Length: 49
Length: 245
Image (cartoon, rainbow over all chains, first blue to last red; front, side, top):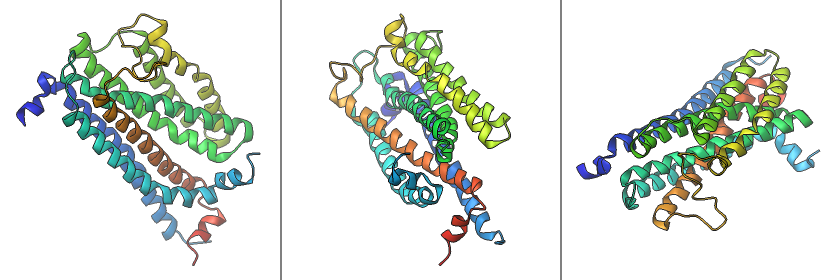
């Protein structure tokens, strides 16, 4: 396991890459999802004219 | 103009529920592909004989770079359709592409930098490939800023579309930069006339990640467009009728 995490001495470069990818992809999925939920909720609570 | 079928689906009224049905499936597929590709790339694929384990950055860097350019071409397609046929859904498509493209481009630049440091000995070089990719990031940011600066949506859409189409010239420059100039960056390994120059043990996870990133892009793009539709069409009759029993 330690060996795997060390990535042959390149762990300090490889892991930040993957962490950043998770962050970027995660945020770009979560933000539109949250925005849509809010908009949809507003739409349903707004009185219909 | 596009035939009755496409015209129908290009109407927000039809696009909105259709996209809503597609997003969960695409999202699940993307997550599965990315998980499989990343596990394969990090655990099963062998180390490179020259670059050791540092090359595993490729499984993020190359898909991100591919998406940074694909997103631009999709955005340009939307811009073109909006300019010529005034289709509002095409403008929404273009608008929703910009922040995603900027994110993919930033990810490409940072992961490339993290790969460049151990392999080239530098975080950054003013090399043709790196510089043209940086220009791409500025194009995305410029497109976002321009749209934000114009209040009237139609005018904002047209101005942004023009800037987007002018910027298309940068895409072939990015792609061919490694052939046209002497660069630090390695030449293409996948898109070669004589086939990919990567061993299958490394190629398979790379293709899985590229597929995963692409499906992910479509899923989040559709979800963004759904938000855009809800905002722009909030008073439309079809939206009110959507929930009617």
